[in-house]
Image (cartoon, rainbow, N blue to C red; front, side, top):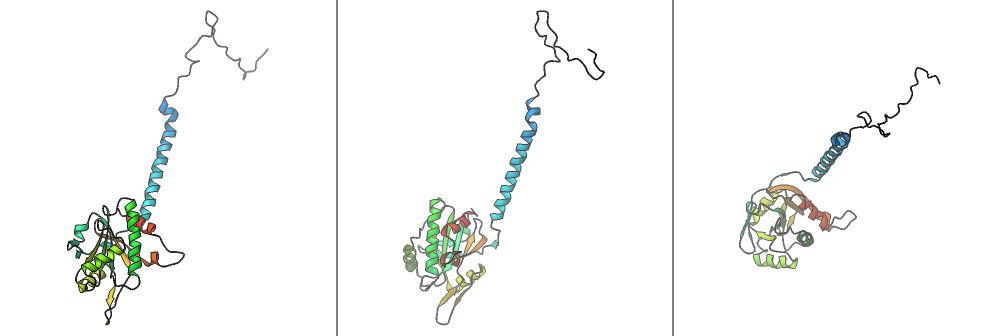
Length: 236
């Protein structure tokens, strides 16, 4: 049978002398090195991992609280007569709250809220070790050390991580203003103040002003103690 120029007979495998197929170098394909076979997939996997890490880091940065400024140095006395300052409490995140025990409205529910946050942080093992609460009275005349002890016990405040502090009245009002907390006293001796809690990081930098009213006032948007605990833990 004639073959056209474009058609070639199929080559038959060369037979060995004993009738078997003779193996030649042309009939055996050398396996590709592992890197050549899987290199592209490996590079693609590494790129995906790097991209995932970058996206995760960017999302974490979005949740970070910016530094709002350095906290003002203070010096107060706790209920045991010990001196407490901003500097000697560095190394822990702190909630700084200006209040007074005879407050007829927001102070008691806010202190109760803080006690709930305290319990949340205890479960995480950070209260007293990495987080400390500092409640400073703006009415030191009536809030004696004994009265503050009684007030603290009413809310199961753990002294290992929660200090109730007092100092001179006018200086405390001025210190509160340095933390952008307005405090006033009318002619009848009644106190008023902004119900904000200052969040300080371990270096004494202001990271947030937490509105306690967002947690204690009823409403659909009311926040939980767990929400506040999460905010605190974000600066650890």
